[in-house]
Image (tube, rainbow, N blue to C red; front, side):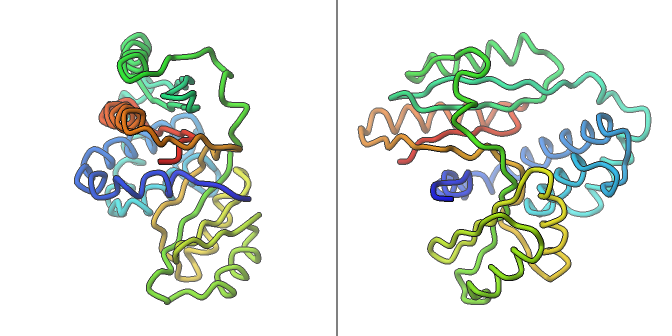
Length: 243
């Protein structure tokens, strides 16, 4: 499987993302709460969506106490029921395909804000399904081997034995791909084997890519992503831009 996962796309802004860790934790907390509500269980063994959310939380270095507290909140009488998952699709500069996953208590508000972000920076909001066909839903686990602590053969053997579909190595970074259904099993097995993750979640991985070279297009794409990422309702943004 060739290409750029979300990790490669966000490496350029990782420092900025780290500075927004509090906001990231808030978004993951919401995801955990809704996963418990939707899955009807606070046990990740019996709730695959919750297991995936916990893996994402751990990769983001969310403390275990925070994870436990949010699960307990969801099992209590909190107001998480008012949130719903919504997905928007559209195009960025030069026809870049963009998918925006949100979790909101006000569908009209987030729709207007996402539309504004597209329109303001050279894109447009499209109809449901307009770009999703060009992405594959995959579990993606990212492991840092740049310090030489993980050799390619060992990581490959461990990942495949755990049930991974494919492994890529780029500049010391391992990207391990799974089916959505097998994500929790693979991430759990690797975690039990002593692996820690830079990122671990179910992603929309592009089948093809659009390379942006014009500085104006790159600037517009970056600004569009920034304003969407700053939105409290936006959980994830997937796109096929390379720049």
